[in-house]
Picture (spheres, rainbow, N blue to C red):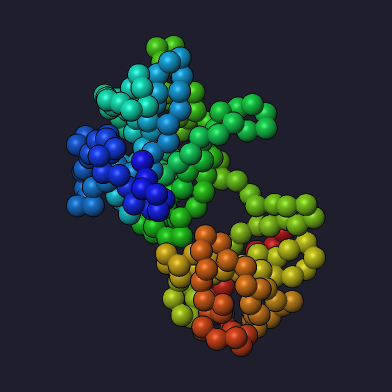
Length: 232
C-alpha cells in the first residue's frame, strides 16, 4: 500500500516474493535480478511470470512462479526458464501477456538488437498457453511486428551510429517524407522529419519520456551521417 502522498510505500504492507536463486537467473552475470512481473490466473492458480538474469546478458529470459493467492507464497517452477534465447534472438524478456483481436493469447517482449549488440532493443511477439497438467508454455516461434497506421506504412532500417552517439533509424512514409527516430541510450526516442537530403527539423515527438529537442541540443536543423534509408 501507499501513503497518502501516493508515492511512499507503507513498509509494513510489503510482502517478500522472490530473489534470484535459480541457476539460470544468476549464471554469467553479476547483475542478478528478478524483475518485470506479470500475473495471469488459470484454473484457480496464479502464475507470476518474470524476467531473470541481466538484461545485458544473452541469457536474460522468462521464468514463472505459482501460488493459490495473489499474496503468495510463490513457488518457482522447477523447469524454469520458460523462455530463453529462442532461435535467432538473445536477451528476450520483460514481457506482457494479452489477447489479440482474433482471441489468441499472445506475449510481447523485447530482445537484443542483434547478436553481441544490446541496444536498441527490439519488440517481438509470440503466443502462450497451458499444457494438460497446467504448466504455462511460451511458443519459441516468434515474430517481429511492423509499425503501421491508417495511410502510413513504415519499414525500419537497421540502426546506424550517428555523429553524436546513440542510434538512428530512418524510414520513408507513404507521403514521401523521411522520418528519423533517434535514441540517446536510456533517454528515449525522438523523431525528426525531412523532405529529403540530410537536413532534419525537429517535430518534437518523443517516445517514453521527454528528450532534447534536437540532436545537437539547439533549435537549428542538424546533419545526420551514416543512416540507412529504408524503402517501402
